[in-house]
Image: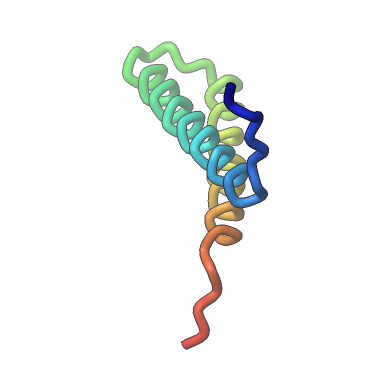
Amino acid sequence: MNAPHELNHEEVLRVKLEVFKREHRDLDDAITAMADRGTSDQLTMVRLKKRKLALKDQIARIEDELTPDIIA
């Protein structure tokens, strides 16, 4: 039997990063679909765009944390 494997901090960040990127793409697709169909409720559109922007910020923070500082 396999023993349970605990993820270290970096592995947890990488999993979160993939989840956030997937959600960001899904929101982008949803926003595009709403705009293409002309069924865009402005309030819903604003909420989706705000969520997408918040995800972009979270993705950038995680990527910064995962990328080692390189001293030039």
